[in-house]
Length: 312
Image (cartoon, rainbow, N blue to C red):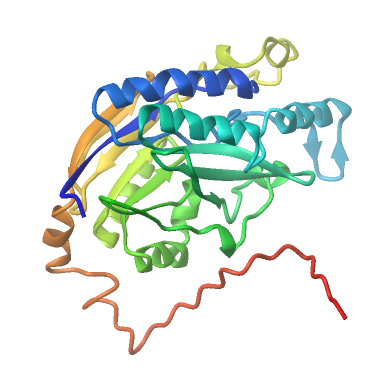
């Protein structure tokens, strides 16, 4: 295993509700990160095509509007298939810059959207995907739930990486499952820009004795499509819809890169992977601190498709 890795956390805004233009933006930003030596490049939660903060999709209890259905249609049509042509293009972007690329996307399957993280290797191979297990609040209206079959731990020359999305990080058993996979680089793409999020990712770094890469978008109201603004969908929302807060934390809970707020930007850092051992010296969550004689976690990683073919 290599002793260090240079990473890039990209805090940017997508071209909202426009997957093609957003992928174009990724194609512009990844080479810039690679030019600074980055070997791993991370983008935020639901970067393709956007995190539709502040939108109602025309729903309340017992009611859906035609306008809301059209909003969902636009969101669906600008989401991607994994695998599929747009996914292949992301793989090509990774290959062109010879980097590991991890991107938050909206994945569609049948008629359902899943908040998903996709992983690509430096040769462009799709290494895996993670679907968010539990959408939060009103996200449940527009997103489906993932299952245990998409909880990959990706082996790399610099250690194992895995992703846990936004408020999944408040699921103790999911965190424990990732620690059990020996995740050294814990990716935490999010849409949460509150101060409490920093406490969350610092705690995870200390608990898991891992590097945590928190990655968020920076989005202003005027970035939304004109028709959404004109009909007053976002009236009352602040001009800065998401202020960011991307950061990099080391296994002892210290900032490698302080939180970035109120602008787009890119955090670049060289991670000394040996710091994990320094942290595990006195706390190893899956080793001498685990008490496996008392606690057992059973993780079901079977796909739950609801379909089974019975043959004679």
